[in-house]
Length: 299
Image (cartoon, rainbow, N blue to C red; front, side, top):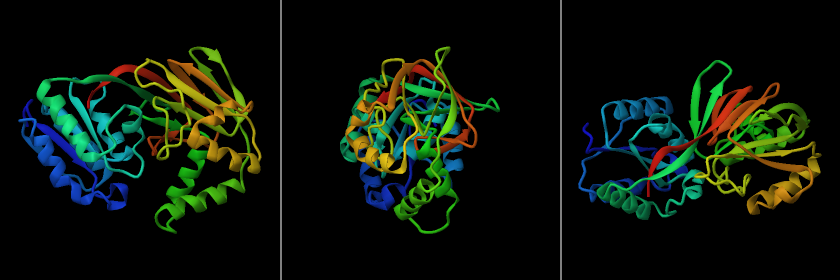
Protein backbone atom coordinates (compact mmCIF):
# COMPACT_ATOMS: atom_id res chain seq x y z
CA UNK A 1 0.00 0.00 0.00
CA UNK A 2 1.06 3.58 -0.56
CA UNK A 3 0.24 6.91 1.05
CA UNK A 4 -2.38 7.42 -1.67
CA UNK A 5 -4.33 4.28 -0.81
CA UNK A 6 -7.60 4.06 1.09
CA UNK A 7 -7.84 0.87 3.17
CA UNK A 8 -11.36 -0.32 4.01
CA UNK A 9 -12.33 -2.48 6.96
CA UNK A 10 -15.84 -3.85 6.39
CA UNK A 11 -17.93 -6.04 8.68
CA UNK A 12 -20.45 -7.94 6.52
CA UNK A 13 -22.33 -9.01 9.67
CA UNK A 14 -22.80 -5.45 10.94
CA UNK A 15 -26.39 -4.34 11.32
CA UNK A 16 -27.38 -8.03 11.27
CA UNK A 17 -26.36 -8.12 7.61
CA UNK A 18 -28.93 -5.64 6.35
CA UNK A 19 -26.26 -3.46 4.70
CA UNK A 20 -24.38 -6.36 3.10
CA UNK A 21 -25.28 -5.28 -0.43
CA UNK A 22 -24.00 -1.74 0.08
CA UNK A 23 -20.28 -2.52 0.04
CA UNK A 24 -19.71 -2.43 -3.76
CA UNK A 25 -21.41 0.97 -3.94
CA UNK A 26 -19.44 2.26 -0.96
CA UNK A 27 -16.15 1.19 -2.55
CA UNK A 28 -17.17 2.88 -5.79
CA UNK A 29 -17.99 6.12 -3.97
CA UNK A 30 -14.65 6.05 -2.15
CA UNK A 31 -12.88 5.53 -5.46
CA UNK A 32 -14.30 8.87 -6.63
CA UNK A 33 -11.58 10.42 -4.45
CA UNK A 34 -9.07 9.47 -7.14
CA UNK A 35 -7.24 7.15 -4.75
CA UNK A 36 -6.76 3.41 -4.92
CA UNK A 37 -9.24 1.60 -2.63
CA UNK A 38 -8.32 -1.73 -1.06
CA UNK A 39 -10.50 -3.98 1.07
CA UNK A 40 -8.76 -5.45 4.11
CA UNK A 41 -9.16 -9.20 4.62
CA UNK A 42 -10.00 -10.55 8.09
CA UNK A 43 -11.79 -13.62 9.46
CA UNK A 44 -12.23 -12.40 13.04
CA UNK A 45 -12.30 -9.23 15.11
CA UNK A 46 -8.71 -9.83 16.19
CA UNK A 47 -7.62 -10.35 12.57
CA UNK A 48 -9.43 -7.15 11.60
CA UNK A 49 -7.53 -5.15 14.17
CA UNK A 50 -4.21 -6.62 13.07
CA UNK A 51 -5.02 -5.87 9.43
CA UNK A 52 -5.67 -2.23 10.34
CA UNK A 53 -2.36 -1.98 12.19
CA UNK A 54 -0.52 -3.47 9.21
CA UNK A 55 -2.18 -1.06 6.80
CA UNK A 56 -1.24 1.95 8.92
CA UNK A 57 2.33 0.67 9.31
CA UNK A 58 2.54 0.33 5.51
CA UNK A 59 1.75 4.00 5.11
CA UNK A 60 -1.85 4.22 3.87
CA UNK A 61 -3.39 7.63 3.42
CA UNK A 62 -6.77 6.78 4.97
CA UNK A 63 -8.58 4.00 6.80
CA UNK A 64 -12.34 3.63 6.45
CA UNK A 65 -14.50 1.51 8.77
CA UNK A 66 -17.73 0.19 7.23
CA UNK A 67 -19.91 -1.17 10.02
CA UNK A 68 -21.05 -0.30 13.52
CA UNK A 69 -19.30 0.77 16.69
CA UNK A 70 -17.52 -2.58 17.03
CA UNK A 71 -15.89 -2.13 13.62
CA UNK A 72 -14.99 1.46 14.46
CA UNK A 73 -13.49 0.28 17.76
CA UNK A 74 -11.17 -2.14 15.98
CA UNK A 75 -10.07 0.46 13.46
CA UNK A 76 -9.34 3.28 15.91
CA UNK A 77 -6.79 1.09 17.70
CA UNK A 78 -4.63 1.52 14.59
CA UNK A 79 -5.26 5.17 13.68
CA UNK A 80 -5.30 6.75 17.17
CA UNK A 81 -2.55 9.31 17.48
CA UNK A 82 -1.45 8.91 13.86
CA UNK A 83 -1.70 11.23 10.86
CA UNK A 84 -3.79 8.70 8.93
CA UNK A 85 -7.23 10.01 8.04
CA UNK A 86 -10.15 8.01 9.41
CA UNK A 87 -13.56 7.63 7.79
CA UNK A 88 -16.71 5.95 9.09
CA UNK A 89 -19.51 4.54 6.96
CA UNK A 90 -22.25 3.77 9.52
CA UNK A 91 -23.72 0.35 8.76
CA UNK A 92 -24.19 -1.24 12.17
CA UNK A 93 -26.89 -1.91 14.71
CA UNK A 94 -25.37 0.86 16.82
CA UNK A 95 -23.59 3.80 15.17
CA UNK A 96 -22.99 5.95 18.21
CA UNK A 97 -19.53 7.23 17.33
CA UNK A 98 -20.73 8.25 13.88
CA UNK A 99 -23.80 10.00 15.29
CA UNK A 100 -21.76 11.76 17.96
CA UNK A 101 -19.18 13.12 15.52
CA UNK A 102 -21.52 14.39 12.80
CA UNK A 103 -21.02 11.62 10.26
CA UNK A 104 -23.98 11.40 7.82
CA UNK A 105 -26.36 8.62 8.88
CA UNK A 106 -26.85 7.38 5.31
CA UNK A 107 -23.96 5.04 4.36
CA UNK A 108 -23.67 6.20 0.75
CA UNK A 109 -23.76 9.86 1.76
CA UNK A 110 -21.06 9.17 4.34
CA UNK A 111 -18.89 7.42 1.73
CA UNK A 112 -19.26 10.37 -0.64
CA UNK A 113 -18.29 12.80 2.13
CA UNK A 114 -15.18 10.74 2.89
CA UNK A 115 -14.17 10.75 -0.77
CA UNK A 116 -14.52 14.53 -0.93
CA UNK A 117 -12.50 14.95 2.28
CA UNK A 118 -9.70 12.74 0.95
CA UNK A 119 -9.69 14.54 -2.40
CA UNK A 120 -9.63 17.98 -0.77
CA UNK A 121 -7.15 17.03 1.95
CA UNK A 122 -9.61 18.00 4.70
CA UNK A 123 -9.88 16.28 8.08
CA UNK A 124 -11.49 17.28 11.38
CA UNK A 125 -9.58 16.63 14.63
CA UNK A 126 -11.74 14.60 17.02
CA UNK A 127 -10.97 13.46 20.56
CA UNK A 128 -10.62 9.83 21.62
CA UNK A 129 -10.54 8.25 25.06
CA UNK A 130 -7.39 6.36 26.01
CA UNK A 131 -7.78 3.48 28.49
CA UNK A 132 -4.88 2.07 30.49
CA UNK A 133 -5.67 -1.24 32.17
CA UNK A 134 -4.34 -2.55 35.45
CA UNK A 135 -1.84 -4.62 33.44
CA UNK A 136 -0.59 -1.52 31.60
CA UNK A 137 -2.24 -2.34 28.27
CA UNK A 138 -3.67 0.58 26.26
CA UNK A 139 -7.00 0.61 24.41
CA UNK A 140 -8.81 3.46 22.68
CA UNK A 141 -12.50 4.16 22.27
CA UNK A 142 -14.63 6.74 20.54
CA UNK A 143 -18.10 6.66 22.11
CA UNK A 144 -18.76 5.50 25.70
CA UNK A 145 -17.22 3.20 28.28
CA UNK A 146 -19.71 1.44 30.58
CA UNK A 147 -18.61 0.19 33.98
CA UNK A 148 -21.92 -0.32 35.78
CA UNK A 149 -25.08 -2.36 35.30
CA UNK A 150 -24.86 -2.22 31.49
CA UNK A 151 -21.33 -3.61 31.56
CA UNK A 152 -22.48 -6.44 33.83
CA UNK A 153 -25.31 -7.23 31.37
CA UNK A 154 -22.86 -7.24 28.45
CA UNK A 155 -20.57 -9.65 30.27
CA UNK A 156 -23.48 -11.98 31.06
CA UNK A 157 -24.76 -11.87 27.45
CA UNK A 158 -21.31 -12.69 26.09
CA UNK A 159 -21.18 -15.83 28.25
CA UNK A 160 -24.57 -17.06 27.02
CA UNK A 161 -24.90 -19.41 24.07
CA UNK A 162 -28.68 -19.13 23.85
CA UNK A 163 -30.80 -17.39 22.66
CA UNK A 164 -29.30 -15.78 19.56
CA UNK A 165 -29.54 -12.13 18.54
CA UNK A 166 -31.02 -9.31 20.63
CA UNK A 167 -33.11 -11.73 22.70
CA UNK A 168 -29.92 -12.89 24.39
CA UNK A 169 -29.26 -9.35 25.62
CA UNK A 170 -32.88 -9.01 26.79
CA UNK A 171 -32.60 -12.22 28.79
CA UNK A 172 -29.29 -11.08 30.28
CA UNK A 173 -31.00 -7.90 31.51
CA UNK A 174 -33.72 -9.95 33.24
CA UNK A 175 -31.19 -12.28 34.86
CA UNK A 176 -28.92 -9.49 36.08
CA UNK A 177 -31.83 -7.34 37.24
CA UNK A 178 -32.71 -10.12 39.68
CA UNK A 179 -29.16 -9.85 41.10
CA UNK A 180 -29.00 -6.05 41.08
CA UNK A 181 -26.93 -4.65 43.93
CA UNK A 182 -24.96 -1.45 44.41
CA UNK A 183 -21.19 -1.53 44.38
CA UNK A 184 -18.59 0.68 45.99
CA UNK A 185 -16.70 2.57 43.28
CA UNK A 186 -13.36 4.24 43.71
CA UNK A 187 -13.64 7.24 41.41
CA UNK A 188 -11.05 9.97 40.93
CA UNK A 189 -11.62 12.86 38.52
CA UNK A 190 -8.54 14.97 37.73
CA UNK A 191 -7.16 14.08 41.14
CA UNK A 192 -10.38 14.79 43.07
CA UNK A 193 -11.94 11.90 44.98
CA UNK A 194 -15.54 11.27 43.87
CA UNK A 195 -15.90 7.73 45.19
CA UNK A 196 -19.47 6.57 45.66
CA UNK A 197 -21.79 3.62 46.06
CA UNK A 198 -24.10 3.00 43.11
CA UNK A 199 -25.20 0.97 40.10
CA UNK A 200 -24.27 2.99 37.01
CA UNK A 201 -21.03 4.48 35.67
CA UNK A 202 -20.44 5.72 32.14
CA UNK A 203 -17.52 7.68 30.71
CA UNK A 204 -18.44 9.33 27.45
CA UNK A 205 -16.40 10.91 24.69
CA UNK A 206 -19.65 11.00 22.69
CA UNK A 207 -23.26 11.30 23.85
CA UNK A 208 -24.72 7.85 23.32
CA UNK A 209 -24.24 4.12 23.50
CA UNK A 210 -26.36 1.07 22.76
CA UNK A 211 -27.66 2.51 19.49
CA UNK A 212 -28.85 5.93 20.58
CA UNK A 213 -29.24 5.89 24.37
CA UNK A 214 -28.09 9.38 25.43
CA UNK A 215 -26.23 8.26 28.54
CA UNK A 216 -23.91 11.32 28.45
CA UNK A 217 -26.24 13.84 26.75
CA UNK A 218 -23.86 16.81 26.93
CA UNK A 219 -20.67 15.07 25.81
CA UNK A 220 -18.71 16.84 23.07
CA UNK A 221 -15.96 14.85 21.27
CA UNK A 222 -14.04 18.04 20.46
CA UNK A 223 -13.86 19.73 23.90
CA UNK A 224 -10.84 17.88 25.31
CA UNK A 225 -12.88 16.45 28.19
CA UNK A 226 -14.79 13.28 29.03
CA UNK A 227 -18.28 13.29 30.55
CA UNK A 228 -18.86 11.01 33.54
CA UNK A 229 -22.38 9.96 34.56
CA UNK A 230 -23.01 7.97 37.74
CA UNK A 231 -26.12 6.77 39.53
CA UNK A 232 -26.64 6.12 43.23
CA UNK A 233 -28.25 2.87 44.43
CA UNK A 234 -31.52 2.26 42.58
CA UNK A 235 -34.10 -0.46 43.06
CA UNK A 236 -35.31 -2.64 40.21
CA UNK A 237 -38.39 -0.50 39.63
CA UNK A 238 -36.34 2.70 39.50
CA UNK A 239 -33.90 1.11 37.04
CA UNK A 240 -36.75 0.06 34.75
CA UNK A 241 -38.22 3.58 34.87
CA UNK A 242 -34.84 5.15 34.18
CA UNK A 243 -34.22 3.29 30.91
CA UNK A 244 -36.79 5.17 28.74
CA UNK A 245 -35.28 8.45 29.95
CA UNK A 246 -31.90 7.38 28.57
CA UNK A 247 -33.30 7.66 25.05
CA UNK A 248 -34.10 11.34 25.69
CA UNK A 249 -31.11 12.12 27.89
CA UNK A 250 -33.40 13.38 30.67
CA UNK A 251 -32.11 10.89 33.26
CA UNK A 252 -29.44 13.40 34.29
CA UNK A 253 -32.13 15.56 35.93
CA UNK A 254 -32.84 12.77 38.44
CA UNK A 255 -31.33 13.74 41.84
CA UNK A 256 -29.85 10.24 42.15
CA UNK A 257 -27.82 10.76 38.96
CA UNK A 258 -24.60 12.79 38.97
CA UNK A 259 -22.71 14.30 36.02
CA UNK A 260 -19.08 15.46 35.87
CA UNK A 261 -16.42 16.43 33.34
CA UNK A 262 -12.74 15.56 33.58
CA UNK A 263 -9.59 15.07 31.54
CA UNK A 264 -8.49 11.96 33.48
CA UNK A 265 -10.65 9.42 35.28
CA UNK A 266 -9.48 6.66 37.58
CA UNK A 267 -12.11 4.07 38.35
CA UNK A 268 -12.14 0.84 40.31
CA UNK A 269 -14.73 -1.60 41.64
CA UNK A 270 -14.81 -5.32 42.38
CA UNK A 271 -16.07 -7.81 39.79
CA UNK A 272 -16.67 -5.32 36.95
CA UNK A 273 -15.44 -5.68 33.36
CA UNK A 274 -15.40 -2.39 31.46
CA UNK A 275 -17.02 -2.28 28.00
CA UNK A 276 -16.19 0.47 25.50
CA UNK A 277 -18.01 0.97 22.18
CA UNK A 278 -19.85 -2.22 23.18
CA UNK A 279 -16.58 -4.18 23.21
CA UNK A 280 -14.99 -5.95 26.18
CA UNK A 281 -11.96 -4.00 27.41
CA UNK A 282 -10.67 -5.19 30.78
CA UNK A 283 -11.48 -5.60 34.44
CA UNK A 284 -11.45 -2.51 36.61
CA UNK A 285 -9.39 -0.64 37.78
CA UNK A 286 -8.93 1.50 34.67
CA UNK A 287 -7.38 4.89 33.95
CA UNK A 288 -9.24 6.78 31.20
CA UNK A 289 -7.88 9.98 29.69
CA UNK A 290 -9.14 12.26 26.95
CA UNK A 291 -6.68 12.68 24.10
CA UNK A 292 -7.66 15.84 22.18
CA UNK A 293 -7.61 15.52 18.40
CA UNK A 294 -6.36 11.93 18.57
CA UNK A 295 -8.04 11.04 15.26
CA UNK A 296 -8.32 12.92 11.95
CA UNK A 297 -11.93 12.33 10.95
CA UNK A 298 -12.89 12.38 7.27
CA UNK A 299 -16.50 13.54 6.91
